[in-house]
Image (tube, rainbow, N blue to C red; front, side, top):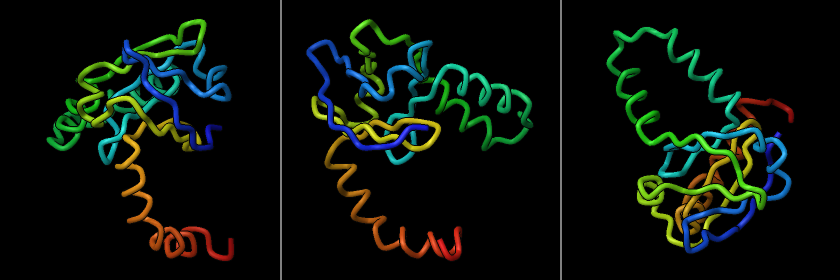
Amino acid sequence: MFSGTFRPRLDEKSRLILPAKFREAMGDGLVITRGQERSIDMRTSADFAAFTERFKNASQTDARLRAYGRMLFALASEQVPDKQGRITITPELRQYASLERDCVVIGIYDRIEIWEPQAWTDYTAQQESAFSDVQEEIFPGF
């Protein structure tokens, strides 16, 4: 399980050092791609392969699915972290997420997201009130 919030920086070669607690799970390989709300989505290679299998078996006659696939797979980058736990954020993904140097890396159960810091601050401010409301709807009494 991935959880927590970290604030690493991209180095001069656009490499990001993965938080230490995420490195073991990502050590055998990962895939980074376009995420939601202009974030970057990171999953283990095994998890991304399972998702790809589900995608492959879905109805390709659905225009929404084709469009989603184009957006998701076009920027996907398969990587293996180096010995220092670094991965490279491609220029296209950096542009998509408006990343320059500072980043926010968050664990979300089965995946990791990378955000531009101000975008993350704005997103959490917008979602704070809905967080309480949704919790009661999804998990009554929790």
